[in-house]
Image (cartoon, rainbow, N blue to C red; front, side, top):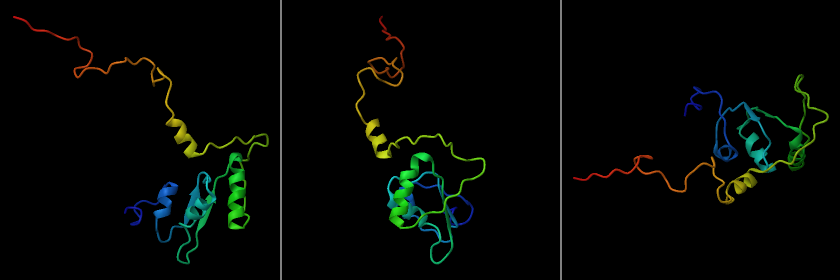
Length: 141
């Protein structure tokens, strides 16, 4: 609501949220990374320039994303203009590394861990009692 009212001037959204956003007069979309699925790029940039308005979409692309950029250009049947900003020139010796897709990261995080592979490695096998680690007390008369 604050964004639509103009109180907030920047909106950050995930691909999922971007599909459901309908905002009039959104002048800019900035992609801080390229989507893993080319069609998602169309949904992202489709948030700007709606209803006959002009809009600008800017994508920051690293060497690891060049194949994604080619896939997007193939989908939209258009070569996107590229500009290298002074002071941010890519390292000519940089080697592209495979990008691990978010779905792969999620699957890896769900794999069972080997026994004893906890966060700290110092956990006891029993949970703490309600009153912490205090010794049991007995009262007799």
